[in-house]
Image (cartoon, rainbow, N blue to C red; front, side):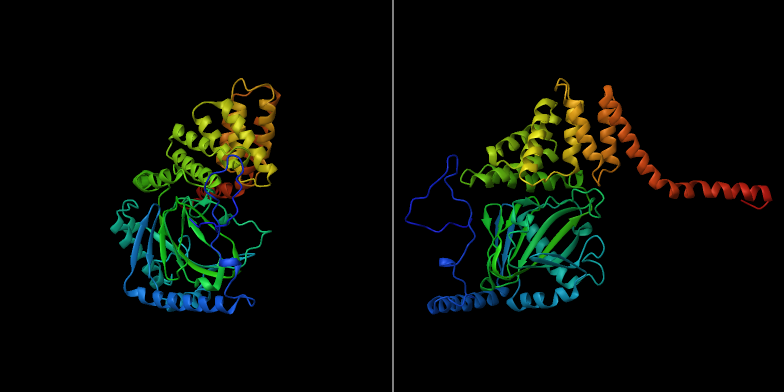
Length: 467
């Protein structure tokens, strides 16, 4: 973890704040940078000496790699030379399959598992095979189990990233604690049935090219030494500090398995790798309060996926930081309460999470938040006379959501099936109309497929032609 700069003044700590200071980006002394024109000559000279030493070290480590294993990650120092890193920066964007952009970031896909896997011809096999071989060598050496037949079935993707100076007006989720769960939340996504079981990041830019941009995995700051590859599990909490000056380049590689995250095929992967590491991180004491709350929330999400609802509820409650609580922790606790049959507590936390997220203009909740809340309001007993009125309001919001698919409609239909009164009748009518609307959109094609052939057969039979 990056340490804050020492000062002779006593630090002031607000009530309830941890003894440990919040993580701070590593910055040069007095915020000076090698690129600054006003930097003293002595500072520039020291930076040049450090640059020469770092360049020589990186160039020599290619023949003697060093390895370090920590929870969630394996670090390989000297995996690539500085010349190879420079070639990635120059040639990578020219050979990209697709480019994504944001105000301060560019992503060039060299190969993607959904349409151009790295293992296919023309999918940048040579570059991807380096990552693949290094990954499986390290996985085998450290006893990581990525699931049965990972060598045969797993496929990879590879991308080049460029991070420029961060724009404070643009919100980037990479700058916040997040977990690459391995699967997209959208069931219609091309990789919905794939699980990302391993990720790797290769730093390409020397540290004197930029300031800021520290990459944290759990409570560890990754090294800024170019040519270093860090393999990490997708269940690891990670975040990136903003770029203050210059630009940072990196290569990112992912390994995917054609199985859902909650499938039996990856049961050992979850229980032997992801869960112990996340549990160890969530239980650490000397952590900054918000960091510990985020780690507990991620641990609760994993336990909920494994249907350990009592344990997940406790993890979510450990993530409660009062007024500063992430709304997703409250919603997670509501889901756990709902699975345990405690509808009253679930409804209270669903309402609390939605209101908190909307007040903070940070509505993380997607369609699932609305459907969960509607189910709790409608199916809960003794919640009060206004519960179904509120449930009808939330149901309308869910039906207006652009991603309310067949699963969304089925859940709402089941929730309102036994409901009585005006609210129940109106909700059932709205759900039926939404179902009919979906069927109407698909009806012309289905009618052509199902009715054209029988009509042709009848015509042929009457004319005596063979059917």
